[in-house]
Amino acid sequence: KAGVTQTPRYLIKTRGQQVTLSCSPISGHRSVSWYQQTPGQGLQFLFEYFSETQRNKGNFPGRFSGRQFSNSRSEMNVSTLELGDSALYLCASSFPGQAGNTGELFFGEGSRLTVL
Amino acid sequence: AQSVTQLGSHVSVSEGALVLLRCNYSSSVPPYLFWYVQYPNQGLQLLLKYTSAATLVKGINGFEAEFKKSETSFHLTKPSAHMSDAAEYFCAVIENTNAGKSTFGDGTTLTVKP
Image (cartoon, rainbow over all chains, first blue to last red; front, side, top):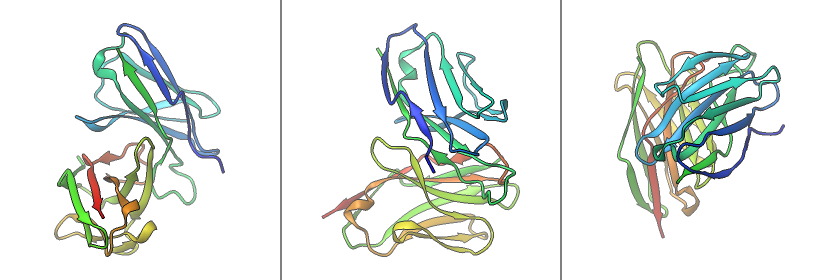
């Protein structure tokens, strides 16, 4: 079974630009969550999508948004990039409410964003 | 609200020595607890999980953790450290398996000295 796939793995943007990151979950997983990881703030929850609906949201400004498609693939978008948005963005999938679920998350390798 | 505290952001041990990484949690309901490991430039992968079946949980790579309700702890141990164990370790908690959000600790970086 293929794992969680995130693209692109690395990208460099300049302040004020916007960026879109993509995440393909494990086949059959209907929940996709996003986390921002920085050396200073650790792992911070951005949002979670389940069956195309945002179910949970972290404490991030409105510049951070996401969506989920009918095939469970998800994208997150950051508009008007700031230097502080430089981070590793991690996507994780899971299968809440389905047989065998024990709540664990399956992570992709992340998209490392550098804002100059 | 649930929370996780990992004591010690950096732990250094010698190869062959005991590894002990500490995690304390706060939860209003019986929690589900997890340890994840992250190697450089990679995502997180599950080491082990506590889901109320047994208080002593064995995971991959020789790691284990014991759930102690009275101490609200879920410390991670390994009897003998290996160089390949050098990584960052995260403790996480959820309050039900259908929750779409895990709460993570700040992480502990494990260094293994030869």
